[in-house]
Image (cartoon, rainbow, N blue to C red):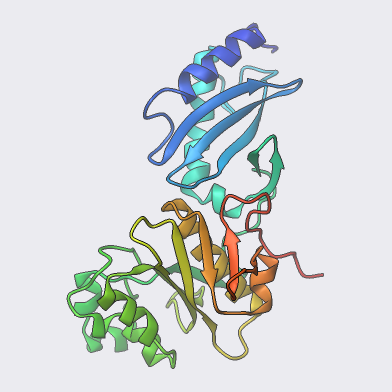
Length: 291
């Protein structure tokens, strides 16, 4: 059954729904909704990321939800489900996983066939630094109880205990522990095999803040264990760059020089090392699929 809502009514409903204060989800801030020949361009800001993002939303041709596929009775109801779908996409890493193109200064996110956030067979997450993680007993670890993985407070009571499971896996955690003590740690990520146990741990990355304003982040560590695919290090750095951007960093600098950084858009800096501008026309991208 065709719809009986005009394009103007649909556009108005989407604007009302997506541009109001507190729309969609935490971290989302609507900028504009622009009508194009066959679709609407929803323009928004994400967290403190310096980029302005956009997604294309096709005008409806039938009175069905773009989120659930169920019937909807009005343009307002349809627009509300556009917001629901966008909230779900953002919650599952839309900004980080989407392929990107630049259009009129906006980073347009492709919501179709977006690559996974992590390479196949692996998972990447924040290194937990909360009290519960540090208090986990050795008996619990030996019995195979899964390690908590949700990020919490940046500074644990005992920095010397942070990431002990990575150290036990043979990785050097000296740098991130030092950053914790200094109070400059921006993020600490870990990579591990995606199985029921979440082990073994196979890589880590860490960034720190270069300035009090948190406009420049430094990639201090990007490591994967021998035999681990380079795509895992690529993903670790990509996540680290996105975390920095989402907390307001305008650039990421590093003295590390590995091939994956160049693929992500890092370029030689005037004062040595490499630099990536988080609001550049070449945002960090996912690695190409293997043939």
